Every structure is written in C-alpha cells, then in structure tokens.
Image (cartoon, rainbow, N blue to C red):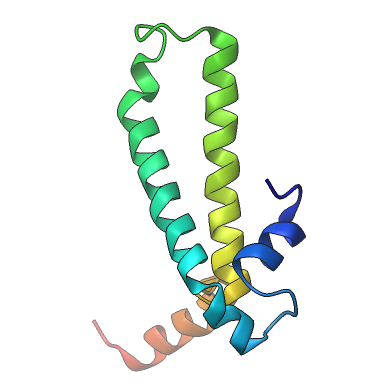
Length: 105
C-alpha cells in the first residue's frame, strides 16, 4: 500500500506530473479507485449510525471512520492530480462576478 500522497499519485496518476501517456496508462487503476472508494463510502454511510449495534467496539468504529476518510481524501487528491476533477473554489469569485454582471433576476 502506498505510504503518502506522492506514492498514490505515482501509482494512480503519473510518475512524471502531467505525463499524458502515464495518465492514460493508469486510467483503469484510477477508475477502479474511484468506484471502490464510492462503494466503501456508501457502505459506511449505511452502517455508520448502527456500528455499535453491529458489534463494533469504540476503537474499531474510530479506526474504520478514519480509514474511510483517508480513502475519500486520497480519491479526491488523485482526481485533482490527474486532472479528472478540478477545484472550482479558485474560480468562484470570478463566476459570481459573471453571474452578477450578466444575469438579471
């Protein structure tokens, strides 16, 4: 298992940032990561409020919660690093200006 974000990027995205050939070659791995992470998050969400009743200890519950957050974070980081997703927050002020300037309610 990769030990840090850079290791995840090299494995799922590209060893050389922005290398189109490596991005294309690793696309099936990324898509698998995205799909499996979504399944993990859904499964956790379905059970999160009933974990004690399902027999998990407090320590196990916290460990599982931490792992789910970890993989969700890695998925989001890999998406941004590979260009599969972009962070729109940096564009938000400009988009709001355009909306305010050109759309009248």
